[in-house]
Length: 77
Image (cartoon, rainbow, N blue to C red):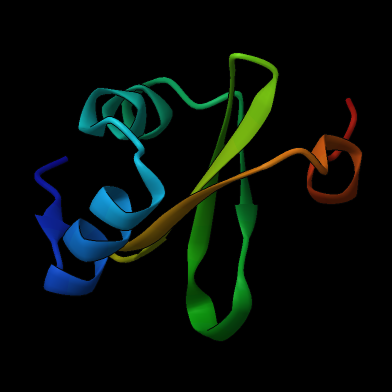
């Protein structure tokens, strides 16, 4: 899919020091996807012991962030 990267998304990546290559990994080969709020989809990828969550709506990437709360956000299958 061709992704649209919003200015907010790009600012958040820079602020949070998340490499764009990590986001590409999450979008192209996620460990899982889960439904988000307001019709959004959240792509999950565990990288370096942290869960990267990439939030999208349609083909627009809204934001991305890392969390250590893997069990809270994953299905655990």
